[in-house]
View 1 (tube, helix red, strand yellow):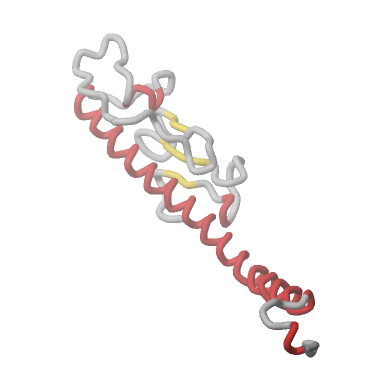
View 2 (view 1 turned 180 degrees about the vertical axis):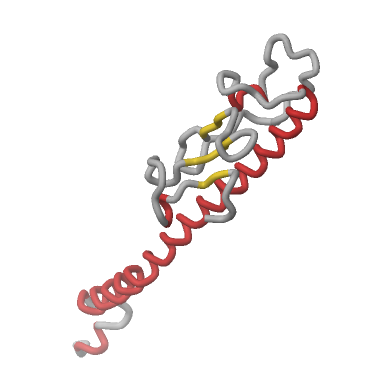
Length: 145
């Protein structure tokens, strides 16, 4: 009772078949990955824009209570931690510590601002002023990037 070659090969894949499948998966990944990476960058920009808007609202609440915006020295920490000699401080204005931007850098706060009462911004993915695409600065004085 000898088994024929076809009868012995009943349930596995050959090395060639596996290599073809891996090659096809690699091609699909090469086509899809760049599109996904672009979406991650845009999502980070939208996150930064939303956080800046929320911090701006919180700064306005601080201003309503105290009568002024935090100084540059006090910074955004004044939204969370009470500043000495501010009896009208009604905080904490944030439930959690001041968030970092999506690229893990602190937001830049300037008071007085050049574009309004204060300037609040992130330098984008590259961490340098200016830039385009993912490297574009996200600010409180400009609309969406």
